[in-house]
Structures are given as C-alpha cells and as structure tokens.
Length: 124
Image (cartoon, rainbow, N blue to C red; front, side, top):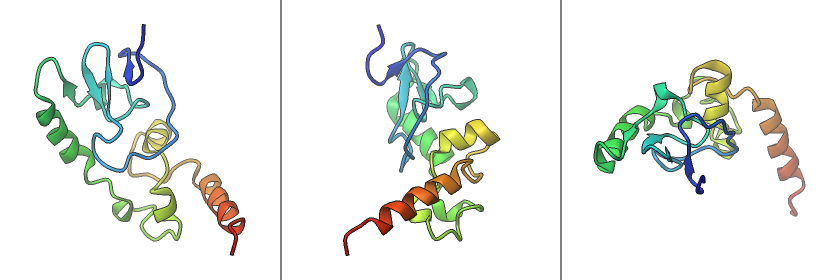
C-alpha cells in the first residue's frame, strides 16, 4: 500500500508545480529516503534518510543544495517578464529534460501562453 506523500524508491511520477523553498515539496520513500519532491525520486538527488539522521540535518542539506535556486538567479529566466508568474516552471520537468535545475523549462513558451491567456481574460 502506498500512502499519500510516500512513494517507493523506484516510483515514476510527474510534477505540475514549482516548489518555492527547500523541502516545501519534499517527499519520502517507503524506506525513509527523502527527495526534493515526488517527481525527483532519483538516487543522485536523495537528500538523506529519516531513519538514519535527523530531519533537521536533511533540511539543512536541502537548503544548501536547493536554496540557491531563486528565479532571479536562473540565467535563462532572470530577464523574463513572466518569471514571477511561473517561478521558472517545474524544476523536476526541467531536470528530466536537461539534467540541470537551472536551465530554461522545456515548456516555457506554453507556460507563457497560459499566463497571457489568463491575464487577458481577467475582468478589468
């Protein structure tokens, strides 16, 4: 049985939102391995194991590793007019497509189109 927020170590998932801060979307496997989010269950991205070390240590590691990923520091996004609407898109999707968290989201144009559509439909 898999409970919400707990996935097996080899789970394949997708993500739809950007996590705003380290461990904000953290997820753990059935074996206690903590990952940055449910879509990033990859051994090279494991932050630690709650059965072997305190959550505070894992949180600190996450902060040091992913806390620097702000939208204004991302080279491909820092000058984009949409950056504060999308926050760079889903970093898990970007990582899966490019192998880097800091790259431009592969669906960037689609995200921009959705933002424009939503803004133009807002009542004035």
